[in-house]
Image (cartoon, rainbow, N blue to C red; front, side, top):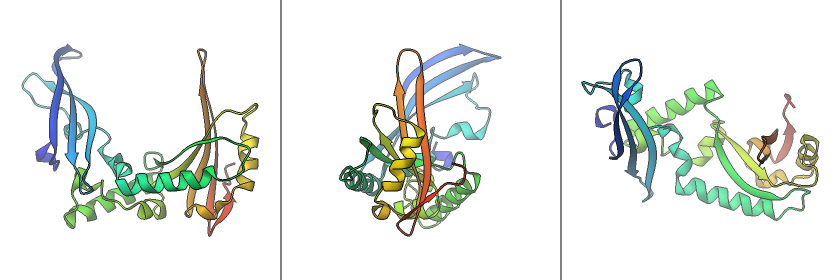
Length: 213
């Protein structure tokens, strides 16, 4: 981890020998760092060593999902809570259960490249928490389209994509930053997992429907 620029601590939870295409040593561990905003952020991860303790692939020597750690910043969580409270005040036909910033860079290659560049700039400036990925300001996250702002809603009598679209029209969007948003509903029962999403954009305080919808 240190060789790859990670300054935190590793706590090993499990070690066992495995038999795959070739024999190896499986390690289940937790990686943690103390961050600039006085938090300890932990990530669970796994690695499989060869019997001589080498690893096939440099990318496996990094903690899992460290590139999403920027979403755990106190400033980001504070903004999520603020926007959630503002959304709850609105009289919509939906029960708003949560608001969160969701990482958009795994499905948007351009956004992923921008995030990688931001992390490189952070490292150059000594902001090396989680290899520079932690200290990305939430305003930059939104402006660079690194995130989708997800408004999670609860079940109603007939939650549908049409209902989500209708509530988008009546949404008081001036409280939301410019960027991509999504009304999102999901339910889980014994038989299946059901989810519905409706994506829209906010620009200058106004809702702009996504062309894909």
